[in-house]
Image (cartoon, rainbow, N blue to C red; front, side, top):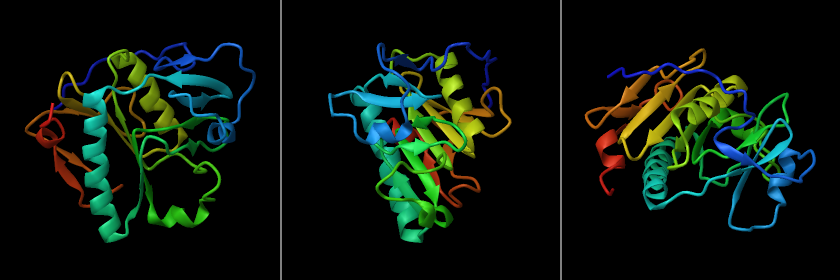
Amino acid sequence: MSNVRAYHPSSTLAPWAEVVPGVGPTRVADLLTIADDGCRYEVVEGVLVRVAGSAFDATTIAGIILAALLGYARSRRLGAVTGADGVYKFPNAETGLLPDVGFVSAAKIPFIDKKKPIPFAPDLAVEVVSPAQSHDDMADKALRYLDGGTCLVWIVWPDARQVDVWHPGDRHPSSTLHADDSLDGENVVPGFRHPIADIFADL
C-alpha cells in the first residue's frame, strides 16, 4: 500500500497556485468580500493567490467525498463538513486555505463565528489535484495544512486514481492508497471508511 516518493520543499510561497500581481497585503477575511469573478483565491502569508479551477473529474470526486463525509459525520454529530468555498484561517498566520473538502470536529464548532472565516485549520483537508498541479506543488500544500494544525490530509490524484495520505510530522506521504484500499477517517472522523474505487467510479 505504501508508494511514497521523496519530497523537497519548494522555495516558492504557494507553488500550487498563482500569485495575483499588483495586489498589496491581503487578510484572510478579505476572501469573504472578493467579488465573484469565477476564480478561487487563497491567502498565504498575507499574499493573495489564485487557485486553478477544477475540471469535471475533480469536481465529481470532491462531490462524492463531500457527500460521503457529510452523511456519515452529520448523522453521528461528529462535526461539520465544508465544500470548496469554506475559508479556514490558520492560527498565528495571515494564511487562509480553501480545501475541496474540509472537516471540523464538533468540539470546535462553538468557536466559529459564522460571519467570519473558520478560525483554525481543518481537522481533515481533502485536495483533488488539477492537471496543472504537480506532486511537489501538492506536497507543499499538504505541509501548509499540517504545519497549521490539520491532523489528516488526503491528496487525490484523478489521473492516477490514487490518494496520498499525510499526517503531522510527515515530510512525504505516509501512504498512497489505490483501488483496493479505502479512505480511513482514523481518529479524526472515527469509524469513517469509504472505498477508493467508488470515488473514481464515474471517471
